Length: 368
Image (cartoon, rainbow, N blue to C red):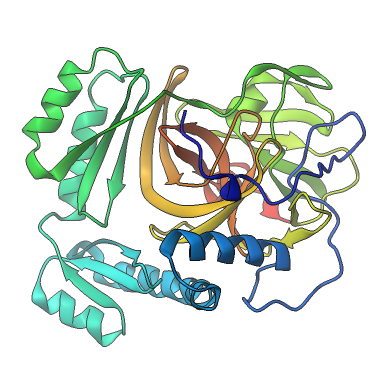
């Protein structure tokens, strides 16, 4: 399995647990607020995100800071413009300068995009054409250790085939028949959920990272990975109350600890407040907190990804470059104070996350 450079693996090694015998949890009590240069970012998250981006892009930390300041407004602009254009837009992304780029099908739509201050890019394939290509691939018998997702930067659907995949002939033939709407990528290793049996926590032979604290009707709940709540009925933090996996990968745990702050642990005694949730954007710089790899950073690579795990296909995932390893399942994906996703799995040097909005809607809970 591929790993990132040591500098990206984690920020600090001091573990924080909710109770002495319990699993690592994504939330701790909020610390005293500290002014930060980037709105919504805690000092620890800002340092990690800026250092990682500066090293990866070969730019100064001042330039990296400015990019991170820019991306929140850019993601909002991208969402508004693509929504207003409807079928005349073919998705979009944030470019290397964190500016919004909208894929369009005609010059009139391009002019409309330009008037908003965003960049327009004329492309060949509509969202409907790419969706039809993805549906055609997903209609075939699922092949374990493959994934299928949208890459708006190339205006293509990407079929990713890991080394461990077997019996791919029909899938590859179908991809070839769809022409340049589909690109095939080959990666090392396998694709699997980020959890291993035998890594014990109180109440079961599994370790996960507890996810976003939420509430409904005065009761606190934790939204987590569905493959975690399916595997364990009673956690040290409370009982599992629901699980959807495969298909989607979200679950619910009733939090009986009496502690449910809306903040992500950063594994060094500090935390990142989470004040809202949103959809992820391709090109967006993100952070992830989990009990194995702790705080790692990266960027969103693809959306609406179907990953064919051994247990079955999970659809609609976010693909990122953030490091994830076994035990991180359920951990939080976020951008500053905005929650984005729940850790699902890994494969070929990438990581996969269930959009948190899906879980919030499914269980009718709201973020604490």
